[in-house]
Amino acid sequence: MQVTGQGNEAGLYTALERGYFRDEHLDLELVQFDSGAKAIPALGTGELDVGLGSVGPALFNAVERGVSVRIVAPMTRIDPEHLGLSFVVRKALLDEGQFRSPADLRGRRIAVPALASGNEYLVDRLLQQHGLQLQDVSVVELATPDMGPAFANGSLDAALIGDPSGVVFADRGWTVKVMGAGAIVPGIQLTFIMFSERFATERTDVAIRWLSAYLRGARDWQRMLDTGQDRDELFGYYSQHTALKDRALFDRSALSPLALDGKVNVDGLRQQAAWARERGYIVQEPPLERLIDTRLFEAARERVGLAAAP
Image (cartoon, rainbow, N blue to C red; front, top):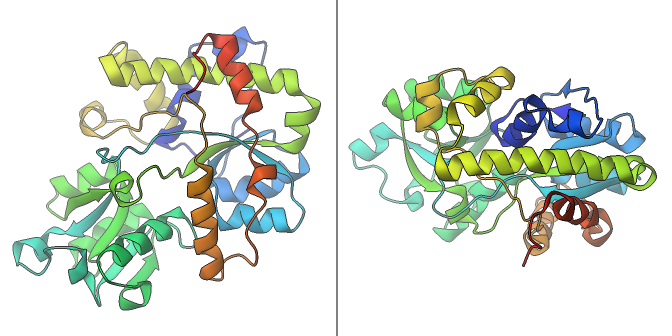
């Protein structure tokens, strides 16, 4: 299966280290990718069984070329009050009175980790809400580690960024969080569990057992977020598999809640697809009804004793 070592995979790493996959007689091979989008061809051929990542133009274009995958469930919730993924602005602009609202970003340089993605979609929606269009600003693709120096030298004015980088940048006096992604587009979903067609249809029992193990880990992680239970232990697992090794930074970061209900916001994905078509990133809107199949996830929820999603 494909992983990227990002925080939204916390449920997976908890399940792995607590032996939940072993309980299901599953031996996982984790294959590191820079992004989930790069794993889509291998998912389409069945070389990979499971992918974790974003659903957007890369996937939609692959489906148009005949690649078959299943969107099984969302990975995280992005609540309106949650600041784990935030739009940030260079602190000097606020200090000097040059930024009072996103309407003041005209002519400014804004970075996103990936163009033609949910990241750019969020920035576009934010600008539209304040009377601007993408062409009124300069939107650039920049890896998160490269955003810090750009903010520090004044060559970058705003960005969409996730924690813990959001905390680090604020600590260094570079940026201020203005708004969380869930406040820009309520109900937005950006990352998903995806199965190859072969895994979902020919190895259904294994797929449900995989999801059952994952759900046990995700439930443990969410319990830790809600109550603090086993925080030291789960941080240990998290730090083994991600770049975040600093416990103090871990404690101060807005960690992503997990989507245990498995409900896919189909209308939200349809809006993202329509946006991608308007931008010329895809030729036609994808067959979401054929792509999305949550039945395996529901079977796994029942198997591990989670109540039916409302």
